[in-house]
Image (tube, rainbow, N blue to C red; front, side, top):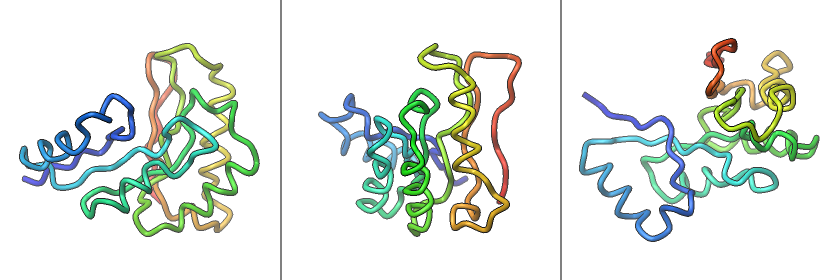
Length: 148
């Protein structure tokens, strides 16, 4: 059986002291691939996961704006995300979705992020990627998982 961790936030400061050891433990436990979620601390830094993916051959990346940071996103943010989607180690757009777990932002604001980053009908480079996202803490909404 192949193990893939499809949602890692290794850029989090809580891993600063032992990030390499955490990665080594995952590999030792049989994890063969990891998907670094590219939201970091939000715009303007959109390349958090790409930096990790470039450093390790077994780490791949997503790009996106976390729902909590949706209010920071601008037209320039979305243009940059479309450019970053061309990177060979970017495999998905995310983390995006509606997240009610923490009430940092209104759902209406976070809902515009998937619309702006995932408009899949316009022939942009980003359109070749699936969307990665979900919903936290609210029974009335649905997650986002679509194929290209």
